[in-house]
Length: 283
Ligand SMILES: Nc1ncnc2c1ncn2[C@@H]1O[C@H](COP(=O)(O)OP(=O)(O)OP(=O)(O)O)[C@@H](O)[C@H]1O
Ligand SMILES: [Mg+2]
View 1 (cartoon, rainbow, N blue to C red):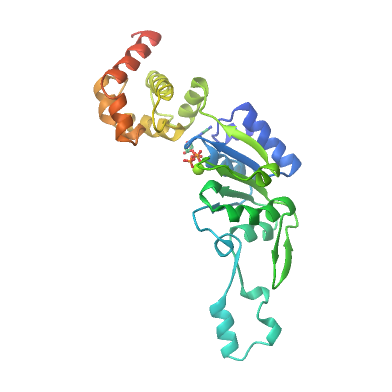
View 2 (cartoon, rainbow, N blue to C red):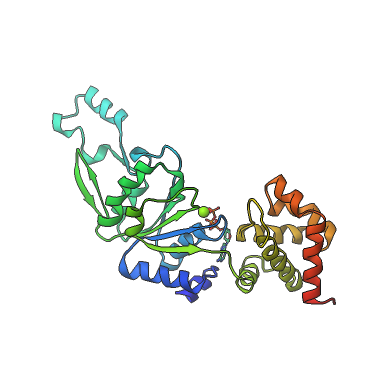
């Protein structure tokens, strides 16, 4: 599994690869929680590519409801057919009037897709109750039409940034994995894959600097997404290694809160750089 993911450009921790493997074998949803920018969304895309399955993505947001997530009735078309007199009374809720959204699409798709329910913590809690039927039975009950069940269960990934706790009932139906920041070695591997043009020495310094930042008490720690972005930014600037001026002028790629930037700028950055240089030596 880890090797398959790697071939698609995703560097997975062993525990994550195992969790993904088991989710597939046991046909259970995989629930991924973790810091922002640590590859939660990306692994769904990677799995879809690896398995040759379509990816259906449900981005959660406040106020997301059935109509946005599962299905809607096409009222306009219903009205039109009523006006045109094309409709026998009980036909009003015929399948042709149904507009499937992500969840229903995932159940109806022949050859099960990867269904990504992204950032579930952004949706309201009542929505989770609705998800239970989908996650445990792989079916949706439409009062006017009956039960629609997947011929083969989709591969479900749920992510959360843990801005609030997801209900136990949802978690119990899933395999759970906490996506942590990668180790320095793994992060360097990710950089090699994602920013192949970067000089090795620079990449090592970038990783060491970012790992150092994550040890600080900042409001928002930089994720892997920021590591990649910073590396690309430094390449654009033709930097060969980290120096105080370059770090100073590019901190906004890494840190998105002025308090964090103020905290790191200057002496803290200089201290990290000195430490990195001491560890890596000159030359
Ligand atoms: N293990 C990894 N291997 C390869 N690339 C990775 C890995 N982790 C993160 N990335 C890269 O980092 C970027 C951010 O990842 P992703 O969007 O999946 O994070 P996320 O955990 O979903 O973040 P958020 O919580 O902000 O949605 C992606 O562009 C992805 O390419
Ligand atoms: Mg994401």
